[in-house]
Amino acid sequence: MTPPLLALVLGLLGAAVLSDRGAHASAVGDADRGAKIYERCIACHSLARNRTGPKHCGMIGRVAGTQKGYRYSKAMRAWGKVWTPESLDEFLENPRRTVPRTRMGYAGVKDAGERANLIAYLIRENGPGGSCP
Amino acid sequence: MYQPKLFTQLEHLTLDRRRLLTGTGKVTLSAGAIALLTGCSGLAGDAEAKSDIMADDANILNSALGAEREAVAAYQVGAESGLLSPGVLQLAVKFQDHHKQHTDVLAKTIKQLGGTPDTPMTKYDFPTDQLKNEADVLRFAAGLEKGAVSAYLGAVPLFGNRDLAKAAASILGDEAMHWAVLRGALGEDPVPVAFVS
Image (cartoon, rainbow over all chains, first blue to last red; front, side):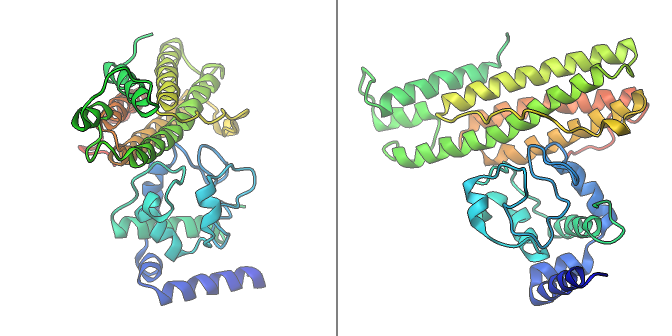
C-alpha cells in the first residue's frame, strides 16, 4: 500500500472510529449487500463514468463537488466536505437536507444498515482489488 | 403527442400562478384561491417560499430529465448494435419512444415552473465493449430501467407540488413495466419482488 493510500485508509478508519455514523458504516457494512443497494443508483451514476450524476471511482477522500468533467450544482461545490464514511452517511441519509439545492433529486437511503452496506461497497470498489482503477 | 392529463393541468396552474405573481392577472382572487391554484398548502401570500418550492421541483425534474435523455441514447445504442432480434428491437424502439415522451414532458414542465432544462450531454459514454450479444443489451437496459424506477421512487416524496409527485409516479409505473418486460425477455422472473426500492 502506497503511503498516501495508507494515510487515506488510516484517516478514514480514524473518522469511522470517531463518529457513530462512520463507525456504523465501517464496522457492519456488507459490501456484497451494498452492491445490490447500488443498483438503485445506476439510473444516474456509475463507478467509472460521469453520467447524470458524477462517477464514484476516486470519490473516497476527495472534496465533494470536485470530480473533473462533471457539472455540479453551486450548492455541492460550496459544501466543501471530504467524502468519508461519515460524510457519505450524512449525505446519503437525506441529500437535499444535507446539501440544499443539490442536483441529486433523491430522498435518500433511510435505513442505516443499507447506508452502511452501500458505503462499504463504495469503499471496497475504490480500494485495492476493487473495480476502480 | 399524448401528454398525461395531470401535466397539462399543471401547465394551466403554473401559468395562472405566474400571471398572478407578475401582476398581469386580470382578476383578483382570494388568498385561498391562489393557494388552490398553485397547488401548494400554506399561506398564499408567501410568494418567495412558493418560488423556492417551484425551483426545487424544477431541480428534481432536471435530474430526471438527465436520466431520461441518457435512456433514449442507451436504447439508440442497443437498436443500432445489430445484436437485437426483430421482436426485441421492436420493444427497444417502443421503450425509447416512451423515454422520449418523458423527456419532452419533463423539459416542458421545467420551463413552466420557471426553470431551465439542463443542456443535454454532447456524448454518452456507455460500456459498449461489454455488449456482445442480445442478452447483454437486454441486461444493460434492464439495469437502467430498474435504476430509473428507484430514482423516481426517491424523487416522488420530494416534490412540493403533489401533482408533480403523481406525474413522477406515473413515469415510475411505465419504467417498472419496461424493467419487467426486459427481465421476461431475458427468461428471468419478470416481477421478482413485491416491493421496489
